[in-house]
Structures are given as structure tokens and as C-alpha cells.
Length: 228
Image (cartoon, rainbow, N blue to C red; front, side):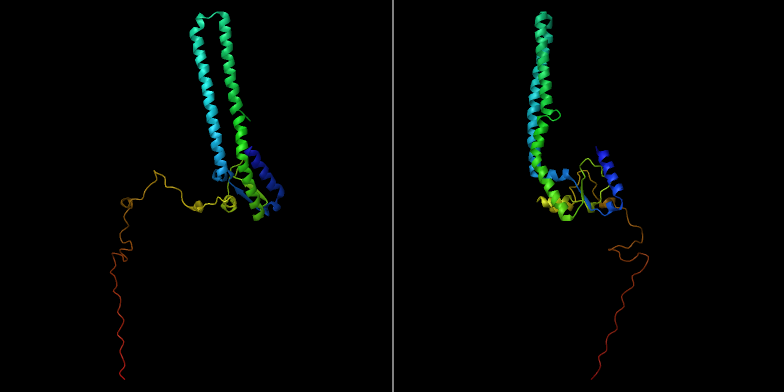
């Protein structure tokens, strides 16, 4: 999908030729913006709770199945052919139930997928409305998504409208341009590790070179007063 999206964009610019160079475009990082939106983070938390609850239920079903399998293996030699058939049918039924439940909850377009789409849709709609406003305000013709399927080999920060969208959403931060936290294992400057300056170097503590004598400042001659 990413290769197809990149090919389509390149084809568009080649076909438009000179007209494409006159078009105004920008890009955003929708993934970064969504992570800043409370509605999206709350939806993600609820989805995670559902996932954990259903996973716990699956683990319980699997534990029950394993218990039945061990019991059958331990008693198999004592069972009649009819009893074996019934026990095997029960095991197969339990295994099918486990597999079907797992597919229903976590499979493609399963309950978790549908619930997630339902929960994050309001945040996505809100993001789209903000992007649409920025596009109209800035007179843009195209708006790309850096975190989407399109491969962006290079992005000029001048065309990044992520912060404008955050401002439109009321999520702009004054710390956007501040440096991040210093890593715990980052190198620390140690004065002892600084190599000595070469002989004769001029510093603030030694403004003159050691090989030259400082020239004393010449005093101004006294001004003679005229006698009236």
C-alpha cells in the first residue's frame, strides 16, 4: 500500500508538470496529534481494558481444555470405546469453542476491531475537521499524512502543519521547541577531560601571549591652565 501511494503521488506531480509546482501543499503527523487528544487516549485505554478482559477469558477456556485433555490421557486406558468417543467429542467441542471465541473477539473485523473503530471515530472526525480548517485558512491544495501509508522520503519542516492543527484543537504546547529530557547514559562534560590549550594561546585569564610583554598604557599629558 505504501509503495502504491508513493507511486500515485509521483505520477500526479509528473502529470501536472509545471502546474504541480504552483500547488501549495503541506503535511501533518496524525499519529502524533491523536496521541495528544484526550478523546483518543481514553478510547485506547478502554480498548486495552476490553482486550485484557477477553484475553483473560480465553486463558480460562484454554486452561479448562488442557485439564480435560490431561484427564482423558490419564483415564484413556480404562475407558470403553464408546466412552472414548464421547470424551474425544467433548474435547473437540471445547477446542472449537475456544478457537471460535478467539476469532470472534480478536480476528479481522472482530469485536475488538469494531469496538476500537467505534471509540476512536469521534477523535478522528475532530482531527479531520481541524485539518480541513487549516487547509482553507492557509490556502493549501494538498495535505499529506506523515504517519499514513504514503512514504515520505524527505519532509521540509516549513511544510509541517502539525502544530497548526494542534493549535486549532486547543492542544498547542509552548514546549514544542524545547529540548527533550537528557538520557540517563548521556555523556557529561568533565573539565578534567578537556585537553590543555597550546602554549601561547590567548585566553580571558591570560589576554596576552607569554612570549610578549604587555605594553603599558601611555598616560595622557597634563593640560596646562592659562593664566588670566
